[in-house]
Amino acid sequence: MEQIVLWVATFLSLWSFIAIIYKVFNLKKYGFSLKPFLLIARSKSLAKKLEAIGSSKSRGWRYISNLSILVSGGLMVFAFYSLITSLINRIKTSQAGLYPIVPGITIGWDVVPYFILAASITIVVHEIFHAITFGSEKVPTKSFGVFFAAILPGGFVEADEEAFKSSKPLSRMRVYASGSFSNFLVFLIGMLLTVATISPIPHGVLVLDTFEDAPAHGVLKSWDVILSINGCEVHGLKSLEEVLGSIKPGESIEIVVLRNREVMRFHLTTAPYPGNTSRSYLGVRILPFDYHPPTIPWLRGEAYLHWVFTLDWLKIVSLSVALINMLPIPLLDGSGFLRSLLENLLEDRKVSNAIMNFLGAFSLFLLIANIWLPIP
Image (cartoon, rainbow, N blue to C red; front, side, top):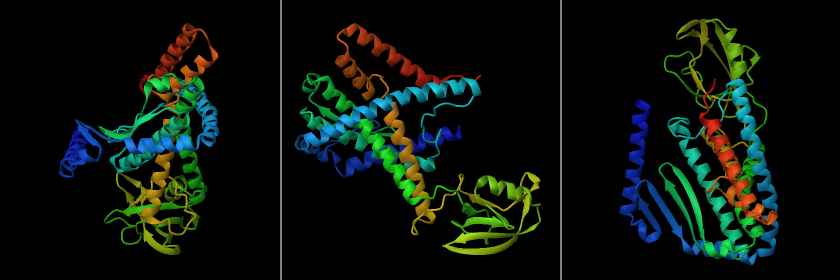
């Protein structure tokens, strides 16, 4: 109950703050509009600039668009494969399937800023690619916009509907494919940045803080990296648990840490673990996943933590959007993509409509079943 009250209070406070900023700075004259729990920013000039980029680089962008058809088609197939295998695994092993992202419920408030940043980057790039592709396919655009609805960011490109509908099926496929293709590129960039800046091999455990009156308090500091205890190397959370499991409460230990790129040794006496006096206790709050050291010197402490969370959420959100967006569900790009493909391949509209209806319903079933199907 407390969690729900906190969620509602935070939500209402956020939108009260947005309403005040909108009023005080008169954001309406800058192209913003505010409705209950919906803030929209729309620009006609930006849409025309992006359209101009596409039309001026039409030939080069056409190669990219053709590649996007192949990649997005593959993403659609992989999305079906992932959902089907996830559902089968859920039924066989009783493991959870997909988790909808709900701040304060399925994800903590501490990671919400990273999620919003990742979602904003993913959506803006997605719509930019749509706008440029509209230009390369000679489809006029009216406006480019982003919005914040309730707790989620979003985006859109308003195009000339009649011109788009009358364009060739292949042109429409290029437009529909460009969004998920851009998200896949963002995912790849996130992967490359991770490989370039973070070691793939875990080494040590990162200390976030120490608890007052605990053995480690006043000895270890935030951002220390525990390298070994009593000569036993600590590679990650599992090895730390194993080492501490072999140490009795009240035992004196030597702990080696990395602090500001300098290896330091300390001695302290463990205490009984609260609630389980047979286990030893240091009293440290640690990073809840294995520590992978940065490969560049300045990426330490809080900077490291922000960088890792930003990259992780960027990869999660961009790939998730790339896959789910290509499902043939109404309002998603996958629906328009598949309909245009079938229009190009089949002359019988009844057959193509039947295929669309079946795959659309099947996609919805897979999504819902992965999220809400009761686990036996």
